[in-house]
Image (cartoon, rainbow, N blue to C red; front, side):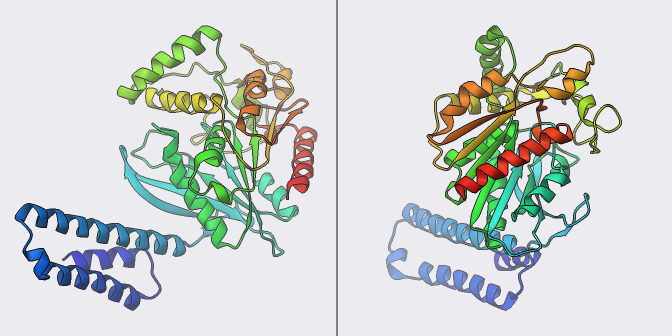
Length: 389
């Protein structure tokens, strides 16, 4: 029964040569049965024998799991993406977590010419990948473009899940591992990791400690979320207190107190120029679980202690931050989510090769700024990349 179950798992993974896989699985079970018949095992006491058989079973299961994961990755097929054009996507099943089934989605757009350079983009909180123009910009400069909708965001959000929910930033590492594996499988050997806001925080930690960090050749951070935009009392007392509760009671949720103003500055139906799914990127940030706050607090604390990212890093931010209770047109030309002083303060802690650039009149998401501003963003980015490739 166990042999049949494992074989069925391989069939679901889409293997192209089932004869080889079936023979490999049968070989494993033959080895297991052969070992169980050896006289020196029979002479062992009952307790030691149980421990031995348990260890052998674990080795076999882990080995098969590794092979299954490898085959599953290589069996991934891409289909046209919802954004159209050259963009295509694939959804990958990941191990289940505390909410049940989990998936991540990798989106890609390859250049027309052969290249070995790639960019991987990680979105922010209350966000997903919809910036088709960014993919076109990278393609035009000779980069294969990839983006990932992390688990519980955008294309990867499942009905039973709490949107954007996470309890440890490390939960995202498996998603990034998967995306990088696809990038390397596509024969890219220069990888630029990109992250916006919370995605910038995630990308920073991954570049410092992720399993495939050595595959990352450069890091670009777009208004990274290095600290909360709160007064000093809330930073020093409120965040640690909520984080301590979130470690024990992660499902408690609170409203963010955010306004519609940032959403209005972006969406085409209001004062912006971008069209996107308002269920996946809401006008107001969704409720935050204490578990999410705990994850962010711990990640930011680790960053502030200092990192040792070895690749070149480019950190971009707006030249000013603004706070407002009602609309004014200055909100189109400033970061109204984060305090840029926090970004400037903590960026040097990433490593020894960090470049920091202020973008005049940039929004929080710099690549969603007004046309002339985002053209400057891309110009500076690709000029910097020329110096590090």
